[in-house]
Length: 269
Ligand SMILES: [Zn+2]
Image (cartoon, rainbow, N blue to C red; front, top):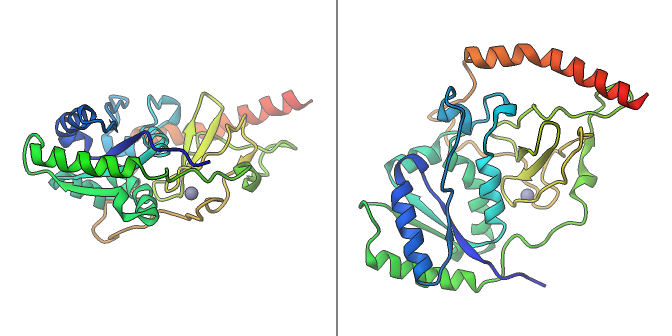
């Protein structure tokens, strides 16, 4: 049985368009179209937004996995409103930036039905009444469509590959965060447990406990292999220059692996 969608979701540039989206979202809700948007972005104070969005920091300090939250909301959304402003257009173009990372999921909605995606250009501080009415009409249309991401597969974990790490014990290190271009987002649940989310269709693995597997080479449901690089010449490449913090973190990894392997070996004996 196909579920009905419960809301529409926003893809937008948090730093510049938050207030516009907040106002538009409540105006749509008042007209019977619930709309979800990421309402906060929390990052450790000493890392840049680019490092945070690109996953270039010690994963154990992750206060909020915004992309997983976004994908989770999309799994129940009927449509997506993409808010375009000058800054949003920049964010969409640059590898690793927020709206760039949301493109794959939007593409999946478009492939299902182009009606599901609405791009709007922001030209004013607040949305006009005409825009609100028009989007409310659109919202009611897409909410009545069957939801997009409902075809689950029985066991996405069946496609995971054993890592071959560890002595007799398969092992995945949850601090190996996925690169911005990889098809999956690694989501940390707690100190040891991780999960992957497909960045296009939202399929999730179970939580790995002291994880035993690697995610497969592509999404077992939608076949997504990696994020496209829209314009490599122009795009900002993350991670070419390591910061002192990143160097410091990388220096600790071998020791952490040794300790974790020792602990697993002990557990196994
Ligand atoms: Zn997928």
